[in-house]
Every structure is written in structure tokens, then in C-alpha cells.
Image (tube, rainbow over all chains, first blue to last red; front, side):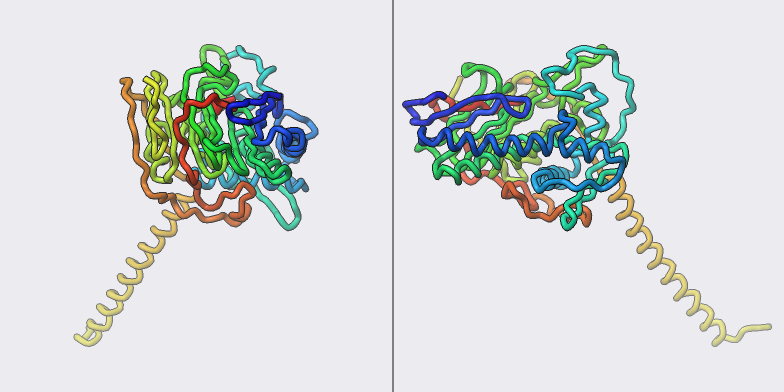
Length: 313
Length: 109
């Protein structure tokens, strides 16, 4: 546990969901109770949504061969978020990319994915599409056609961050920040000057990594980047953000995109879609009133909306 | 059999009505086909190569004007556990620059 006396904030960092979780609270004494609440959320999301656990509900749906599968409220809610993402991005963030991601070689927890391998031999084609997914709320079932694999990786962490922050703040009655692999959600009363968050390419980088530190008091921040979770197949470097239009890693226009929104989920939807939308992203974000910071491959920074100008030279 | 002027007018009127129905039908059919194709083959955004340069650009925000998305019949309801709705929702208080030491990092994982 770390207690930042300047901010009067206590925080703890630990592994979760195949990445790193950070939990911070405004009243240090409440950290254990907030952690317990967050742990419950993380466990529920993991068993519901993981693509890397044979016993997860998501894998049961993917293996059902087109039959409807009864699932928990947690998976229904997570899928609802993923389908909403697809709807709001005209399919640029689509949960039916599972097969495409697996064919690219990302078929296990990323820490154990082979970083090099044979050249890829696969057909460039649109993924099946989110409209293939059938949800029956009355029966509590999900149905996808045989051969279609769901992957909630684009939205599940942000969903868990929002849920974890909200539940922990309600449980302890204090301000809470939850970061899951760099997807940041805050809830409850914030510190006087807001929650300071370093915006950078890689959430696992050190505190001195290049980037900007901004403070938020509400909502969430999410960053998508093509600089992490990259691997090589033959001569081709691939990464984890799949363009549903072609079923391959998205073309790299932006190295990193960070978005602030009313929730971590919305920030994450927008940042992921921006990577895929390429040059059209700044205008698309501005039309939605979102604040964002986009970094090109050569380091050029484009700010959208109310994203603050950097005070750094 | 020869047709008188009255018979000719009747036939011409019939041809005129038939033409109008054919035109209206063609327009309607084109609309229906367009909707079906648009639904089946939605467009995708194109990406172009990044431009060079190192200047910092700023794109001002417009008023939120996202498309009024409709919920398809087989998708869940618009209620969202994360507080979302039918549009992406901007943050209430935009981020501000700070010199404080960060408590978390927002980066990709």
C-alpha cells in the first residue's frame, strides 16, 4: 500500500485480469474495504468474460455451436456494453472479432503469446458482425452462430473499472479511483485538485514515462495504443486492435489515443474506435463533444475538444 | 376495328395511369433495395497515411451530434450499467493539466 501524504490518497497495485490493477481511495482507512469490493467485481468479470479461461461463460457461448446459452447477469451486462460499443461506432468496435484475434495468434493470456511465429495465411474479410449476436433477456441467454467467437477484450476492462469504482465508492462512502490496465474510472468525491493521472503509451511504464499528467474529478480516461501487445508473424508485425472491416490489425495512423468521457466505458469505446478510424478520428471525436489526445507515430500530438494544452515544452 | 377519339382518349388515359404506377413502383423499389443494401453492407471508415510534421494541432469540439442510433431488435435495451445511453457521453469536467505526482497511469495494456 502507498500513502501519498501530499494528496492524502492511499493506493495499492496488484495483478488482475491479465494486467495491472491500481486502486486508490481518498480515505486511507477505507482501502481494505474498497479492495474487497473491487476484488469481487474482478472475480465476477473474469469468470464471465475471459477468453482465456476454459470455464468462463464467454467460452461456453463461443463453443455452443449456435445454440443459446444461459448466462449470468454479469455477462449479459458486459455483452450489452460491447454491443452498445458496436452500435455507437458503426461496427468499428465489434465483439465478434474473436476468431480474427485468435487467427492473428492472440489465443491465450498475452504474457504467454509467442512473440514470433510463422507467417500468417488468412483471408482478409469482414468479421461476422455484432448483429449476429442474439440476446434474450427474458430467458437470460446469448446465442451466436456456429463459428462466431466473441471477444469482449475491447470493453470488458473498462466495464470492470466503472463497476469496481462505483461499487467501491458506494461501499466505503469515499472517493475511489480504479485503473485496470490503464483504463481509469473514478467515483465518489475526488481529491481537492482531482485525481492526477499520467497519460502515456504504456500503462506499465514508470512514473517518468513520456506523456502528460492530467487531473480528473469524474468519469473516466482510457488509452488505446498500437505500441503495446504487438507480436510478429513472419515479416508482419501485428497488434491486438483488430479492424472489423478486414479482420486484421488496424492500420497505424495514431500511435496512442486517450479519451476522457463520462464513464471509462465511453472513453474506451472512443479511444479504440479512434485507432481504427485513423485520420477521421479527431473530427468524429469533436462531433461527439469528447476531449481527447491523439499521438501520431512521429510524436505529433493532436488535441480535441477541451483536452488541456501541455505546459511542458 | 377503328377507334374513335373518345376510345383513343380512354386508352391514352389508361397508358398514362400505368406509367405513373410504374414510376412510383420503381422509386419505391429503389428505396427498399437501398435500405436493404445499406443494412447488409454498412460502410467503414477509411484510414489514410499519417502526415509528417511535429506541430501540435487542436480540434475544437462541436456540439454532440452523434447519430441517433436505433436499438436493433436482437440487441439489448439501451439501458447501460455504466451509465451510457444512445450516445457517447462527454466528461462533466474536462481534464486539467496538473503538476501533481500521478496516482495512476492511463496507457494501453
